[in-house]
Length: 472
Image (cartoon, rainbow, N blue to C red; front, side):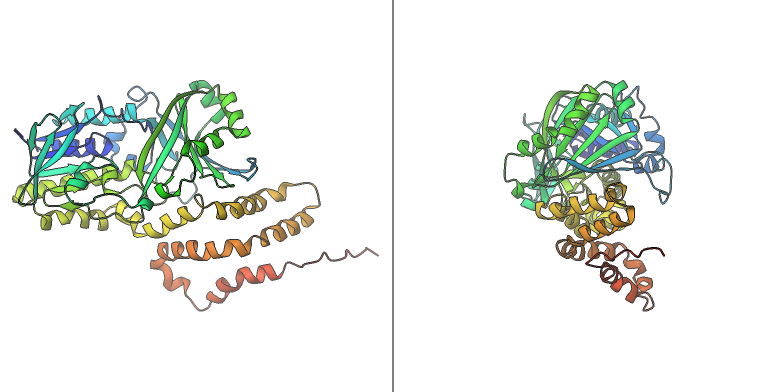
């Protein structure tokens, strides 16, 4: 039996961050990775957001290509709108906008890299700070005394005692289950994410994709929308859906995306070769459940912290790790490891972190994403409506005045289908996001304009073409 101040189950970014911070605070710390090394798990790649460079500048400035060869900054994101026939009907290329407030967020959307490089780099930071790491070892259970977690036991029966255990063990969290915090996920709180990893030469990625970081393939025809992320020497393509929503084998949908003519053309241009098939589970929920108990706290995916809109999980895992260790250090100093003491962890992530800010609108964000990219009925009006609005004006088939009338008339026919979703999903989201400014928005002088604007615009659209007057 070995004794520690903190035991951390999991060697991903959240677990390594927790171990690093705990060791820097002088706490005797051990963290466990079931793989042969951190980053070996079958999820492979990630996008690191600019917030990481803002939150931990001294740490992140040392993440360079010599330490992480797959590292690739991306300034642009591409959106492909794919119709029911599998044709790309529109493309939108976006970059950081003028409302972005800080660097490096003005310079890149994500910094992409493979987890097989990033996770060991994070783990090295933890061990260099004094934390002990054990790999190739599965933690099988929690040790409890009178309902309080006191440590963990590994697959060989070795015990590791500590007054605080941090669960950083991902979506299928043993710590969450054995602590009694969660037996299992609800079907619409957990997603299955299959993806393919492709090799492509760096020079071709840089030449053809330039500063493009990622792409979203918005799909009509009952196919879940897919994502594509570019790294230094390759790219991922993947998609996900909630567990009860798969009507066919998930690879059927992923293969449909990969076999699109436009996608195949991209593969040929890049000289890409398939490298690996991957799959993982990812929590994707409107709001996390309870994240603490006697002697235990959950962080990252184990806590259900991936963003409720697009399920990004690296930053919230690392942020929650930092908060959990701060609370743990206070608990150790006071000798109080009770649930009543550790509830401070939940208060802090809810009230003092970006996790809490994100999940404050979590139900609305989650519902919007579920209602569009993952709703076949809605995507069948969304794709042609948006494509028409964005690209129809550039058509030379008629004078532009005529084309504008045609576009408006075409968009108008989708509004009966679109309005219920817009009202039920987007209005609650914007109401929640702008709740601090609702007094201004409810100003009687502008409310009639806001309420009546769309119907009045539509009423201006005549049903028949007016006769053109001849010049005299």
